[in-house]
Image 1 (cartoon, rainbow, N blue to C red):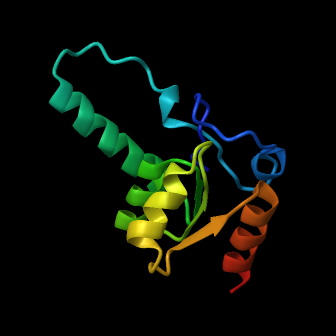
Image 2 (cartoon, rainbow, N blue to C red):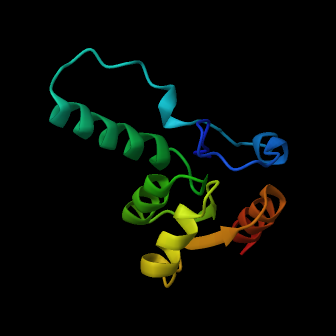
Amino acid sequence: MLLRTDAERAARDDRLLRQSPDAVALDWLDETPPTEADFTARAWARVERGLRLLSRGEQVVTDRLHGHILALLLGLPHVVLDNDYGKVAAYIGAWTHGSPLVRQAATPDEAMALIGAAITA
C-alpha cells in the first residue's frame, strides 16, 4: 500500500488496511534525503524507486496520483482512495476510469473488500 503521510492525506482510519496479512504499507516520502544537486537524476531515481516499490506487490492500494499512474504502467490491479481534496478521483474521472486495472474506494473498508474480491476472482 502506497498511502500518503503528508498534508494531502484524507482524514480516515487506515488501521484495517495496515493490519491486513501480507500487506506492506509505506509512503515514498520515507526516502533518505538526496544529497545530489542534479534534479533530473533525482527525478529519475524517484521514478525508479516508485516502480520498484509498487512492483513488489501483486495488487496496490494507494491514495497517491503517481501511485495510480505507475500502477497502470506496471499493469498492476489497484484500488485508489482519494486524497483530501479530490485530486486523484478527478484525474481518474477525466483520464483513466475505463481501465480494468483500477477500482475506486471511498473508505479503507471498501478498499479491503475490493482487494479481497480481486484475490478471490
